[in-house]
Image (cartoon, rainbow, N blue to C red; front, top):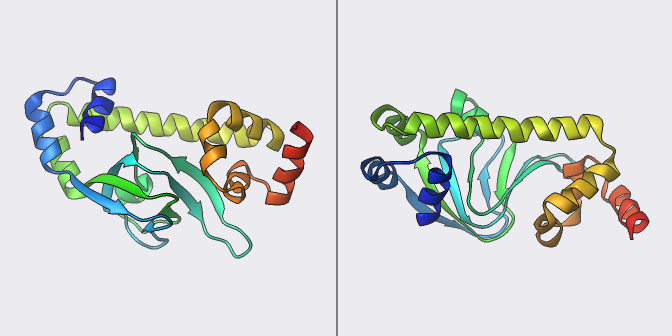
Length: 188
């Protein structure tokens, strides 16, 4: 649980009393590899922090899934749009490896926002960070070629290429596995 406090304190200082209140609401949950955390049509009920594992966000399709995000250790994960609106999710979230999460329910999260001094600051800064990640991804899809996206991914997130099946990476950069294979051959 120290990872969570360290992560939060990189954003803003949190008093011991605020931390005690927040951490008392957290529940540790362990998942096996390839376990769905949220399916299409379900409403997100938690904000989770990954202390171990890799999680994928995707839209399932008949031919191949449309992967649009990966989240790793020491980061928060949620279907944020579903959590905010309490409406059914339009995508799925699943573990790609054995995963350990610390979860807080949406109800408890709202209580943390209401009763702590640092809760709203942390929530705002996390929302801003999620927006920047999403914006960067959208811009890369609009302004870069598939090869440029792959090279960018390779240089910025090499752990993706070592731990995630190539079919998911291909989907993430917006191409077929065959097209990714051709790009990889051309590069090497």
